[in-house]
Length: 414
Ligand code: EPZ
Image 1: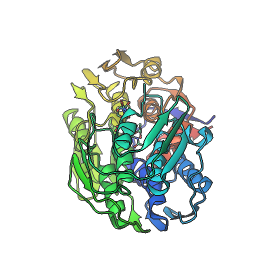
Image 2 (image 1 turned 60 degrees about the vertical axis):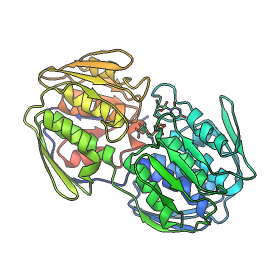
Image 3 (image 1 turned 120 degrees about the vertical axis):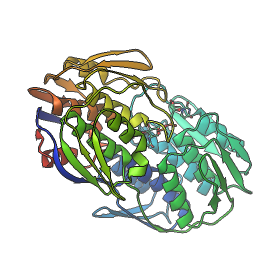
Image 4 (image 1 turned 90 degrees about the horizontal axis):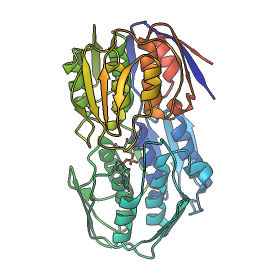
């Protein structure tokens, strides 16, 4: 298990280029199955979740090649083999192969997906939509099987704007007989990137925001596409800059995608300047912000909750965070308290009473964004910390430790 040793108290300073978005490249890699051809994807991050997705594609008979941040995927020889838990257990996004395999082959078998333990993570909305299209889906506690001789289009209204369910139904709808209208879709920017990729491969998708209309029966072909910037990676580094009273510029970002996060940082007293593709932050002392409520886009993103909480732990005043997306996304609170944070948390609420300085401690990461939060807290703390189980962070942050060291962090990888 990997670990970072961090000597806190050093303000982060400098410039950092943000990588391609994990939560965009993963559904797009699953979508390449639909094309049966060659896809060239630029700006793909080097993170372990992408490696897992590439392993799944190769297991299914596809050819993959990486040249720097460009991935070449040939799915001509793909076959619908059952995907084992040794692969699906590593990341939730494995579930997106269900929609693409079902669309191309009329069948999909995969072990139940794993990923960050953020409370229950059912797949009922995915199955509701696929069954509405005429698929026969069986779901046991360890595997998902879906079959359909012919998927039928229609109108599907999602009870909740689930990101993954929207993506799975988008993939399946491209193969339906007739048009499909998806209502109450998720509107996260990563959905827009997936729609743009599918269009570049010949899909006919119109509509915007929470209603998408997909023309069925279009034969898709390979395409070339560049992945959007990772707004969650950017949010995490902004939180680290605020927590360490630093001054940093993030390039290759889309400030529009981060409005809810930058609004909170501005309320907390950070100076932020933005251009077309950069955000600069300067923070002398973060002030408490309350309330912060996580919500579907364009609300405050749940994936930024833990990093921002870590920064607010040493802000002036009392902040309140309400986590409304996941049922158990405060797993990072005990470790932050071990570092001296004064946080009281229930299932959906956390009250953060800012302290002047956190103290270094030895803690373990529990999930991707929670682990990033512990690193941010350690960077702002007095003294030395050890953050264990850094495999969690390596799932979604390319070169996390080297990037932080490049911004002046006193960090050593164990
Ligand atoms: C995606 O997860 C992201 N993952 C998550 O990012 C992100 O936190 C989440 O969307 C919300 O924005 C990827 O894109 C790979 P959901 P997903 O379906 O699709 C419930 C990260 O840190 N739900 O929108 O799993 C679910 O339990 C990760 O990068 C059902 O009840 O999220 C949750 O409470 C973590 N039934 C809520 O909806 C379903 O069938 C949101 O889930 C599906 C979801």
